[in-house]
Length: 76
Image 1 (cartoon, one colour):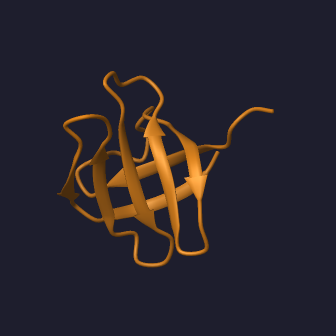
Image 2 (image 1 turned 120 degrees about the vertical axis):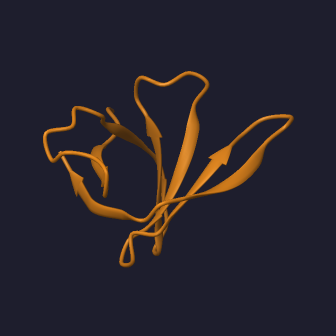
């Protein structure tokens, strides 16, 4: 089973951006996305209605950081 792929655009990105994110987990309120091409992977927690984004670095020295709100979240 392949994972769902999303396009997540921030205010400073073009609608033609090729960056894609794979779905890690989904809850009633949030989607958790990981950029397909980045290493080390950060997970972005995106609120479905407000599109506010929180970045999460997992692992031994994991932490959370604020990210600018997104303007578009759509399944591709």
